[in-house]
Length: 146
Image (cartoon, rainbow, N blue to C red; front, side):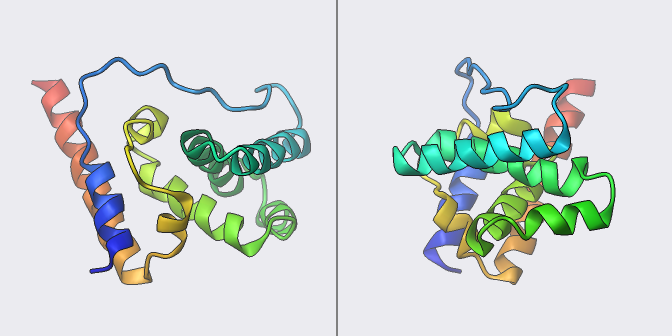
């Protein structure tokens, strides 16, 4: 497995008990889909320019959620996805699927993963990490039920 895989796996397995203040989406929940997209894309670009790793990851997660979950139709998804660079489109969607069940709070426990690590995963590595994410989620969910 690649170094990117090892870095992402290590961060997925972070089980910090520290209290983390979750970063909310950069947009107003009541805003239109287009406004949410524009605000989130600007937030990604700003975080990238300022080299704010965590803010970039969180905003990319929210962009992935907008594209994969919040788009009302496949046509809307395609139209807005085409407005992103391929790098941000692929990385955002991958990041969203990796942390879809674990959520932003778990993502914020990350210590070293970057968006480049997510983007540079092979399809096989991404599939394995998504399975690991589900295992972690199911383990946490089972512990909460006990």
